[in-house]
Image 1 (spheres, rainbow, N blue to C red):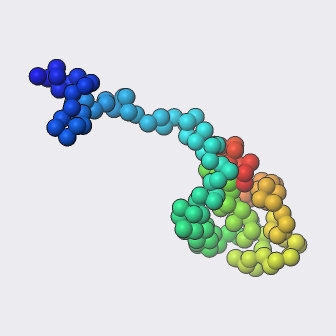
Image 2 (spheres, rainbow, N blue to C red):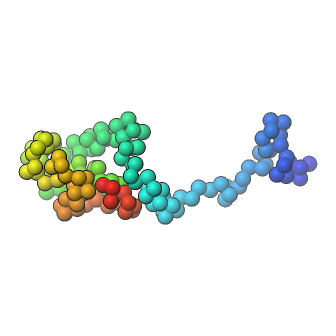
Image 3 (tube, rainbow, N blue to C red):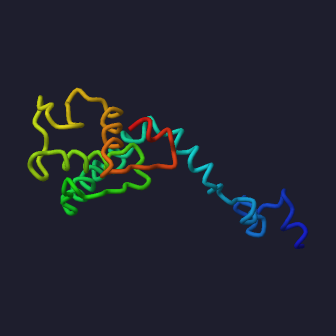
Length: 148
């Protein structure tokens, strides 16, 4: 009887395989290796920010705004953004540190502040964050940093 229940062709009355036929944890284990996770983020890098905003209903933007506001960074503060992804949080800190008023948003057309030119690309902004030794952004996925 156990031989029949464990055979690949055996089915229960509902048509599903018997419980004993479930794959072992070793057979169904998800690959959580660092390389697989890095590849996964590399594959979605170009859509990451859009998906993050969409799937979180923009809560991710609020979270960054709230984080910067709660921390109230001063220009001399050192900030380390680990797993920065595309650099959104590091850029938010950089904008606040380079603003004349703490927490002030740059005005459209104001190009006197480093990294906040409305025509600057996100890549240029990330390069300026990297140039500011007070803010360091790092990520294990190079493709995410390139997008930022």
